[in-house]
Amino acid sequence: MTIGEIEAFITQFPVYQYAFVKPEELEFNERVRMICKKECPRYGTSWSCPPAVGKVDSCKELCMGYTDMLFFSSVADVADLMDMEESLKTKAEHEKMTGIIERKMKESGLEVYTLSSDSCALCGKCAFPKAQCRHPDQMHPCIESHGIVVTNLAEKLNMDYYMGEHLLLWFSMIFFRQA
Image 1 (cartoon, rainbow, N blue to C red):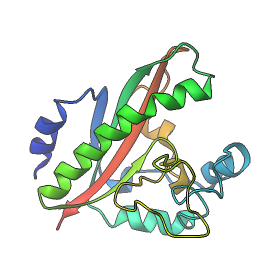
Image 2 (image 1 turned 90 degrees about the vertical axis):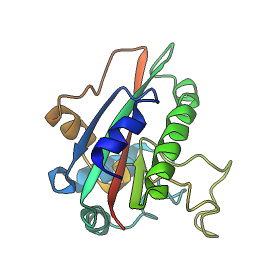
Image 3 (image 1 turned 90 degrees about the horizontal axis):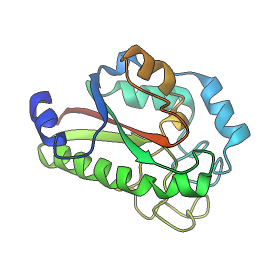
């Protein structure tokens, strides 16, 4: 599957903005991981979050093993951006779209690795740390869990990151290479 074919395929979805990026263009920073640790209640409770995803250096090495990356966003309307419960309810559509795009890329012979906007919510309670992930083929680690600075990437690509109090942007990254 070529970049042009990926581009043609994603037009059927409500992708707001997208770009194809070389993994070398990403900025990885340990400070992002510190924000996870200090501010996110999912830290240490999910296979999609630190420390389960590994150290930032190993996450970076994994991402650098791919030749290209599709970075895209979708938009959700919310009454109050600060209402986490309402905001998280809008994530499902973005995750469904991400999964379909990921599957199509795999079926087309690409090797892929996918990251998404927030920690995985496939299970009511994650099996971490007592048991292995129940859905490793569907689970998408959080972009920030890898230490990736999304705001800088969005700015570099002239993509929106914040659109006001009532519009929420969800992001995904699908790293890919020829099999």
